[in-house]
Length: 169
Image (tube, rainbow, N blue to C red):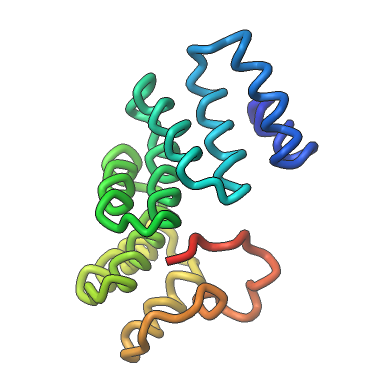
């Protein structure tokens, strides 16, 4: 685990952002620092700024599947569905084993009323991670014909305390 991730876990997002900005002054071309700054501001709901940091990361290292994923999450929160879809597909192209990316993309398709694509993508997330209760639950709701639920309803009750917040779709 990188030093930046340890810092984020120990100090919290706002404090980590301050240290990362100082580190950026020492290493302005570091894609790791750019990406972690993107995560720090993403976790503080500063979506536009997160997108800028993550885009800068990808300019330096375009093969970072996780940066594409987080950029997709930023665009979801900005309600830019097309850009979010593009970023999430870029992430999957680079890491076809990223179950969370399939899951979030499936939710995005569901949110847009693209039911067949949502089912296919949620099924793909379960193929990658067969024991994936969130994807199984979402797929069950979708197949029952449910309209897109509130984020809290997407998580099986027994897992509510174990997971981070979902992006707002």
